[in-house]
Structures are given as C-alpha cells and as structure tokens.
Image 1 (cartoon, rainbow, N blue to C red):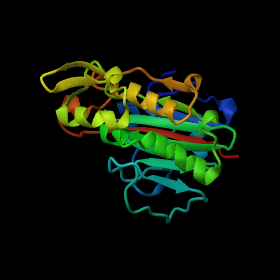
Image 2: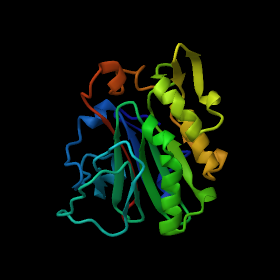
Image 3: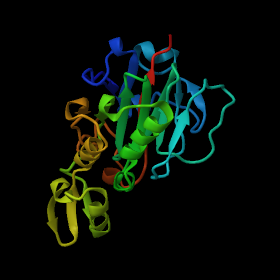
Image 4: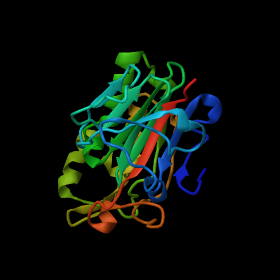
Length: 247
C-alpha cells in the first residue's frame, strides 16, 4: 500500500499485528531530520507510529547487528557501525537508509522481535540476512520458521549491472548464483539482488510464504526514490523502519 510518502505491506504486518513499518520514498525522506547514531522522537512518522522513537546508526556495508534490548534515553549515542538493528523493545522503530541497496524488515510475531537490515551486494554476499536471523535466534530465542520478512524497493535486475569483482564473489553467497544473474557478458551482468536476499532468507529457514517483496526499482523510478547509480552520487537516502507499537 502506497501513501504520498511511504510504502507499507499489509501482508507482512498490519496494525492488528502490533507492528508499525514503512519503506520510505524520497518525499518521506524530506520530512525526516535526525542525528545518526542517536534515538529521535518519530514525530514525522505516519499515523500510529508517532509515539515511537526511531533509531538509525552508521552503516558500513558489513554484517554486524546492533541489539537494542532496553529502553532508549535521549542521551544515548551509538558510536560504531552496523548494518542491522534488532530490538524487542516497544516504542522503538529501528531504521535503515538506502539509495539502491535493499532495505529488509523482519518480524518474529511469536517472540515479538523486529529487525531492520541494510543489504547492499557486499552485505548480501557476506550473508547479512542469515546472520541477522541468527542473532535473533541466539539473543531472543527466535525460531526462523516463525519469522516474516519483507524486502523493500531497491535497484532492480532491470538496471543493476555489476562487474566481475562482484560476480566472482557470488558463488560464496549462493551456490546457484546463476539464478540471480542475467545477461552475463564481457565480465558484466545484471544482478537480481532482491532474489539473492530472498533465497538466502529461505536458506536461513524462513518459509516461502512468509517473504514479501516490493518489486519497485529505485533506479527506474526517479519520481519516488533516490538512486546512487542513477545520480552518480548520494544526494539523499530513503528511510525504512519497523517497530513494535508502544502500549
């Protein structure tokens, strides 16, 4: 479902589930201004999410997850770099920023855990999705079969061309990597990063019918999204977030 500024996926999480989530657009990003690494009142979020905090941290294209298992204070600062955030705390929306990379939101309705993941090709090849699920399992007792995953707008296979450096690393991440590569020629090919992440989620134990995907390409849709590939530099990023609703 698309509003004038964010995209939500009712099949992934509805208001009845006690979860608030969104995949942001460039229109939504213009409304947000908060310090990276610090919690901020989510005054600009949509609807019932306004009573939450939103937390974003420095992203480094790695696989480490920051676990937030206590209430946040306005004085909190998180120095360092993470590309996934996991929390069991109500009233905290964990957020990632993207401009072609893939935002991945996760929800364990049994243990009431949520996670937000920033997955570029480096993170995907290094297994960030599976590693985040493993963190949820080890820290909170999550059973992968119970987890719901939603994959947000990102560079699509239609536009996302990669070189041999990336192609050489793909077999490490996904033995059947040919399934996520199109038009391999002269050391270049188009990579279906969403499909790679979906397959890795399934390999980690997520059920096929628990994975939803927003099939929009950030490079194609200039009116909706920022794109590093299209613009040649970072002029802005979209914010995507998920959180357990405050009581």
